[in-house]
Length: 351
Image (cartoon, rainbow, N blue to C red; front, top):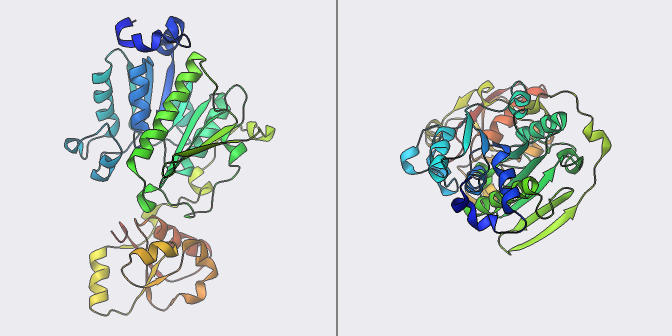
């Protein structure tokens, strides 16, 4: 053990040599090497958590750099987990790091999870969150959850020492498109650092036994006011009886974009300039549409099936949103409801 490296935490009575040895022996899996994952990983590595796994299939894009502090402009288009491992070993070369450059899904989750003692969820979508919960419950693994939305963040610990699970707090996922992710609604980068650091702190507390873990407690933090509150919740016994993993993309309404016909922004702008007879529908929320739009009418995704009479089904209809995700879901919702028409998704959104 590198006593000099860890001296400042070893001298803490709550940690000591025994706690540091527990950190060294621990096996922690981090889902996502993005806004939350970067600070989680950096602080766990710096603290001496001896065995880390990282799951992320994404590559570095320029929009990541505002909050994903492990990466630089020189890393654009590189695989995140490969870059992250290199940077983390530069911080602490004594750590064992295993990387999984894959999307987490029903077929691989149990196999990956079983090697680790604690799971940390830094994902940004509900399908992954419910998958992480259910796999953790099946394998009896505790996991630390974090989420961010604009200027607000949440942290909790689930399935710890037979405590409540994620489903005890959020029994069912929200309806498709009702909660936009950060690429659609925005997020301040420093919030990801704050919440990710809190998640890392919960992991260290769980390993060393220091302090009180956020089990059965949801910490809600508002960065604009710098206020936080803790909401207590109880375990629901039926949420621990999970014996199989589901198709979480269907459960959470994450329809595959590739199944929709598409059109790019340049073509839409050309149609608008040339007065081509088509209908443009923006499925974002009203405040988003008022802030900026490229024309057309606003029918929020949640209101779409109740507003079918507003669709000019004899024309080609282009659906748009901020990034192309909600508009793709709009088309799939119409198809699943049996509505026939010539629907096009504006890929990449209005930006």
